[in-house]
Amino acid sequence: MSWWCIGSDFSLGVTVSGTPGEQFQVLIRKLRIDRGWSQETLAQVSGLSVRTIQRLERGGNASLETLSALASVFEVDISALSTEAPMYEQNELSKEERRAVRYVRDLKAFYSHLAIYVTVIFGLFIINLFTGIGTPWFIWPMLGWGVGVAAHGLSVFEVVSLFSPDWEKREIEKRLQRNKR
Image 1 (cartoon, rainbow, N blue to C red):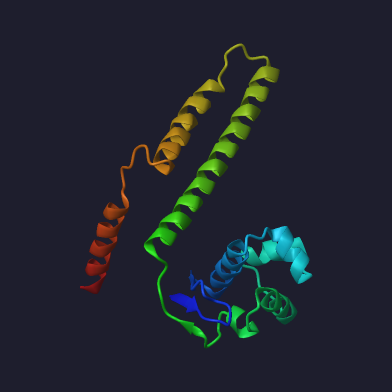
Image 2 (cartoon, rainbow, N blue to C red; image 1 turned 45 degrees about the vertical axis):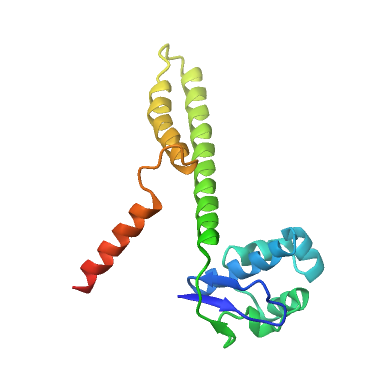
């Protein structure tokens, strides 16, 4: 389900989708970024803690006081921030916004994968170094997992695209038609 929020200062047409928590987190993040604010700046001007802003942007629940503070800062009616407000109309994200969100999520997943890989391989290297085994056995997991990390990077940075968005769209349409029968 997608929603488009209309409020007193919503010329940007904020589009959010998913569960109410996901809708709220996208809405808050988009309003903050559209104003060029960091989480710290939003916390400062709203009187909330940085942790509260981070929790809300990760999909946490907001109290009435928190909603009131955010509505005041963003200069909107408090009902515009409520995911169950009647001021929402169905709409979709633009194609570019969907691509940008997807790319950033994929990039974040790749960097997380890379960081875990480097950390674990370094740990294996240290274990290999201090166990006194003459054979550098840590190289085998490094090579095996490294191939996966490299493939992930090639996919994210679109060097090699085995499964294009068009392919995904065709597969989704096939699946939906199969389910209708």
